[in-house]
Length: 344
Image 1 (cartoon, one colour):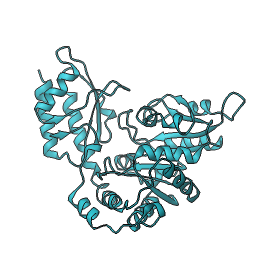
Image 2: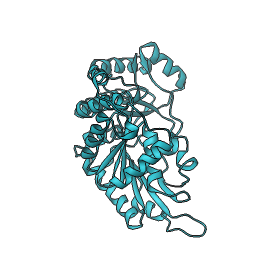
Image 3: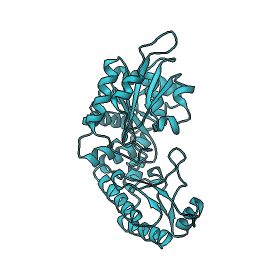
Image 4: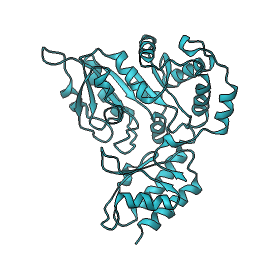
């Protein structure tokens, strides 16, 4: 089966599996795992931050970052489509104790004017804004890659008001590759950033949070509080290191395959799709067909060997996601299946 439900469905490469088996490990909860330490150092260097911390998931990375940057009762400014609002169990409210202030999403990011209007200095009725959250690439906005200059405009508004900036950069390398810019041009506009090894980088599990040394020391406390202090985590970190070293340069292939699927869909009847929005490894589209329900479409694709999820509730659209386990030949097979199912 060709699995387009998410890049989290990608599988470890043989090189990753060998690295996991051969990894030198120790007790990471005590900072004694050499493979984890090496991965953290490399992640910090690549993002231009002073330090980094290996965590179990992107959700945990975002929550650890919010806890480390804010105090309970403060407010959090985020755009209305932010992943941490829709898919992370409400941890920002339930655990971090933050009041979300939502602003419109304008092509993957909020306008600085909207952010400025949402900021609070703190009053007897409102907590002060503790953090402004950015996301890049932005999942529910279509997998859009947001330019560093747009991030800068929002970050400067936040910093001027005394608020921290956190970047949910689960797929930040997709953004960097799509725009042809170094990752540090994006990460310089945040106090903390998390990115995932288990999505487009193809590792089995794990994410990392990066920031100042003081931030990472706080993050260690909250990682343990959330049950994320692992022991011989070097086996996972070894695969993540391979992903970081070998998978970034090939993301252009995933982007090209997604574009090919999008162009096929754009020419089929009853498909509503904006090709300008297909910038990375995601293809969002609406199916406007009276002769076919979403369930029937997914079933028909599965019969042809392609797994597709039902439309995402937050945006009401189908999403196809490419990754390293979807080859160019398989992309051609997906396009043929789409034409077969949706063609006149």
